[in-house]
Length: 166
Image (cartoon, rainbow, N blue to C red):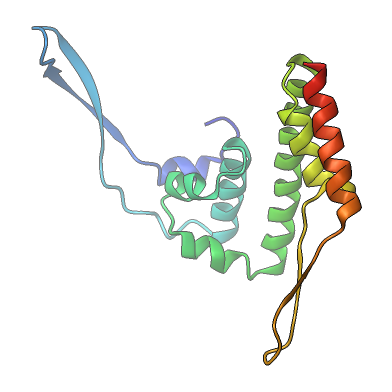
């Protein structure tokens, strides 16, 4: 867990090793078993938050996995988001993760013949290719659904062009 502060080590799960026999042979293998560890609440919250952010970055933006590794509840993370300083730092880390994912997507798009990465990228980043639907209405009136036919036609043509190149 490279980059995680030393405070994380104090409340990280300790693994013990036990030997067991496999079902299909007489071989003995070692199995790691997690032990219950009480979280050290003496560690300042800002250090725990820093550990969370580093885990979040290392886990490619997976919040639940980061919470589990830090032995905190998802609700703790949600409470931390109410702190403007933590929220700003979290948003910065989220942007870093987004840039890593974007770079990975671009690399895959350049090295594969599949149009999927390009389509995904364009739909998520370029408003001309997004499939957004606007719902309008009042409490006592029916909802009206509007969409732009030109955008749908542009998307269809782009997909057809990409698929025809394969």
